[in-house]
Amino acid sequence: MQNMQLLHRCRGLKGAPQILGILSRQHSTLHPAIPPKPTWSPRSHLQPTTDSSAPSLTEAEVQHLAKLAGLSIPISQIDRYVRDINDLCKMVEPIRLVDTADVEPLLSLVREYNARELALRPDVQGGAEVGLVSGRALLKSARKVDGPYYVVEK
Image 1 (cartoon, rainbow, N blue to C red):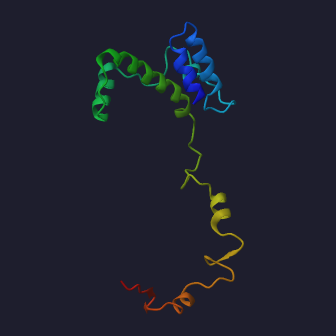
Image 2 (spheres, rainbow, N blue to C red; image 1 turned 90 degrees about the vertical axis):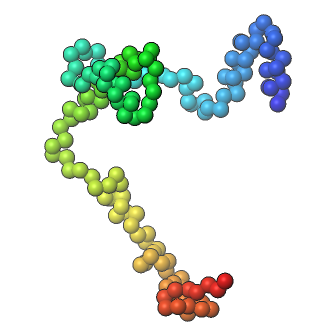
């Protein structure tokens, strides 16, 4: 609350931008280990080659993709989108070129060793904890049952 009052007082002052900048840096919601501004750019990972084997999209193709996606790109920004999409294609090209012929595809994103370790805990047998009553034994204590089901009256 005190900071808000200070902010309102500083708006008309000559040095207000500097004070507001200091306050915003002091009371950032980010953890101190998180930099306030990006420290790198995806463009820094682009290879500066001119003849890339990555596909190059034209303005017409980008407009067609935007139409298929239900996006409306302003005409003034088409060039920027063409450049950005082509840059992304160049960035992903080295990944696409990796030889994966001898790599067996995964059936799941969870590796098998994790699935085996997590399948059953040592204190669990058959899905019920040791020493607890379960299944048909619980049905015996129900007021009303119909076969293997509990009956709940309205």
